Image (tube, one colour):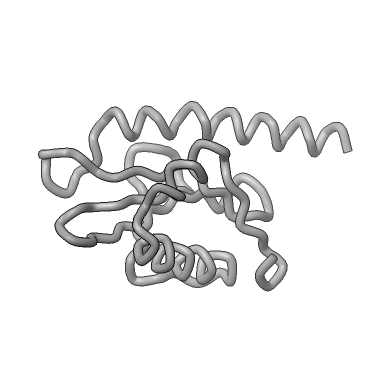
Length: 120
């Protein structure tokens, strides 16, 4: 836990993140730590394509692009919901397939956290 906010992970996001090069993981952990402290790294921008409160960490390394997305508005925690190596040939824009892979897990996470709150 960092300053009262914990960084939590969806299992698939963590698995995909762990496949990134170590230097990329380190830079992304730094950005996530700042998010947990309610600050924003210069590598972070709002993620377009899903409702507000989702942010994208974008890092280029050795000619490749790596992305990690996290949500700040689903609970007290910072939730890492997706990590991927960008393979799009469409420039800066994220592929629609990646956007679609974010919507459903985010919806399920919100529902699970809502039920947890109701049951507690």
